[in-house]
Amino acid sequence: MKFVTFIKKDGVSRAGWMLGNHHVVDMFETSKGKLPCNMLSFLDKQEEYMDIISSLSEPLESVYALDEVEIVSPLPNPRSFRDFYAFEQHVKTARQNRGLDMIPEWYEIPVFYFSNHMAIKGPNQVITRPSKCEWLDYELEIACVIGKEGTNIKASEVEDYIFGYCILNDWSARDLQRQEMKVGLGPAKGKDFATSIGPVIITKDELESFRTLKGYDLDMTAKVNGELLSKGNFKDIHYSFGEMIERASDGVTLYPGEIIGSGTVGSGCILELGTEVHRWLEPGDEVELEITGLGVLKNRIG
Image (tube, rainbow, N blue to C red; front, side, top):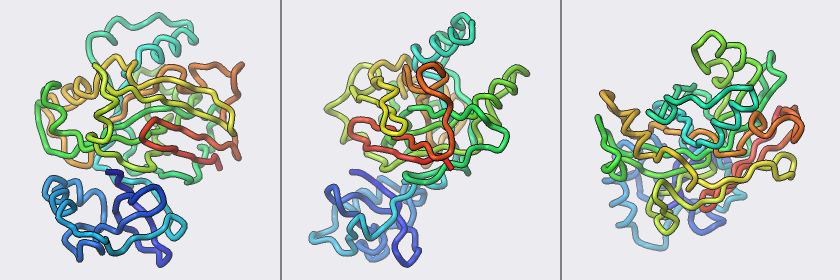
């Protein structure tokens, strides 16, 4: 299933799911209040609520055409957002471009940072470039959404804890990031102004036919103003989401509604490509990320 959050014409926000390619279902209305209004509450009891969805009889009520609603971030208020650094090509190339060798420790543990989970943006939402930033960048990533509480989760058991996946754009103010990371802490201000996810959260069963050893065989592309800049594949990831979640949950409880980002796929940002390939992003630019099965996530720079 493909879960969404949308705004109706009366301004009311609802969670639901896609019905085909052109309609959405209001989960609260169609279940007569048995299902919640928002995605975070749904994830808290998603196993119970998925059973309720299975029991609903057709034809479903409260179905809206896409042109009747505004699709927003499928999970506007995640409980947290950890972003990993899991694609080897991205790490190697980005460091080479700065005259740096690969870090041996990168091969020992999957590492992550916490970003601002209160600055989540959705599809078609305008991204405001920070006032002190001149080097604005996109990052082409995939994210998983936690659907079950757990501590010290083993990589081999992680499928029980993942609810689904979505596209993630980890917007980066590279000049701010470069300055602050010289101090040895971060990134923080280089990242905390916006992160886009969407347009849907697709449940993991929908991707089973694409499964590979470390992830899924999903093409990942990024375009700026219609020009293809980045092209990679999720299957090239070095650390699986199982390994990432095992690391994140080591001595820590993960809860439904937390987001785990993969880090940037190889070639998936301007920092890695180089400004000779494309300049830094400027107001008016449109960035379009696409991942097989997950849809297209577009944002314009304001």
